[in-house]
Amino acid sequence: MANEPRLATNAEIEAAARMIVAAEYPIALTGAGMSVESGIPPFRGPGGLWTKYGEPPMNGYQIFLADPKKGWEDRIRRQDDELFAPLKVAKPNAGHTAMAELEQMGVLRFVITQNVDDLHRQAGHQALAEIHGNWKLVRCLECGRRFKSEEIRLDTLPPPCPRCAGMLKADTVSFGEPIPADVLRQCAEHAAHADLVILGGTSATVYPAAGFALEVKERGGKLIEVNLYESEITPLCDASLRGGAANVMPRLVAAISEIRRARLS
Ligand code: APR
Image 1 (cartoon, rainbow, N blue to C red):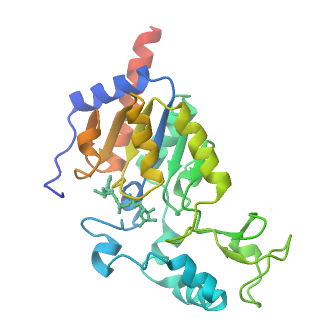
Image 2 (cartoon, rainbow, N blue to C red; image 1 turned 135 degrees about the vertical axis):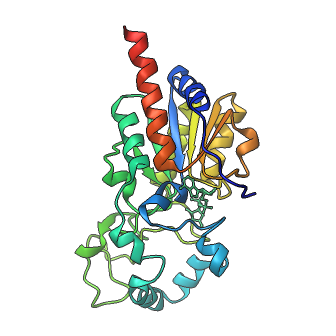
């Protein structure tokens, strides 16, 4: 799929901006590409972790449930590996900031992110669902409550839930693990209202997340892609803006502001 990236032209940005301004309920679905310019590698495509090491076992969750103590020991041991180390130092980039600005402008109604890196939250999003969890949190598999990892003592593994004594697991959703019902419900509710989806830095190959964009398209909605390379969903998009998210998103938001300003004057 990967081809030589060429930067989206101003005319392409302008056309996409007009579609977003015309939409009633635009939402965003974002992926690892949003955070590449924050120093976090993607999973697939050039420089992807799975490209480098192969996809992890699809039954990661079942492996955890079979031996949760070992699951926690592995997680603690891996704190400084190639997956976790960048998460500790990463900061939101201009792409995250621009997307948060679009929410503050009242244009972007909701963000579904597949990223566990906490960067959309740090950028200031209020209307946000982290469909694959957040690396800074742990979650009780009994009561579903989430806690900050640093608030949980690790002298007993697996650590018990402070509220119901159920078993705690990293909030990040493992392969083979069902998406927590509260988050899935939130995503489905906003996707059901949406008439446009901005696909920011995602290969749109993992479900149920990618399904929300297809659902909007099937209902006659529009898809606007921001991606360094072509992806599997590019043929379905009404606009596909090539370039890094930290370059394209601020340009898109500037064009949207300009259109709205012109309308007010
Ligand atoms: N700006 C914009 N897009 C980029 C950039 C960039 N700087 N760099 C890479 N991309 C694009 C790639 O072309 C690719 O299409 O981002 C996409 C990243 O795709 P994936 O690595 O597959 O990430 P994602 O879509 O988030 O994966 C979904 O899969 O492995 C699981 O749980 C993991 O949440 C993840 C899910």
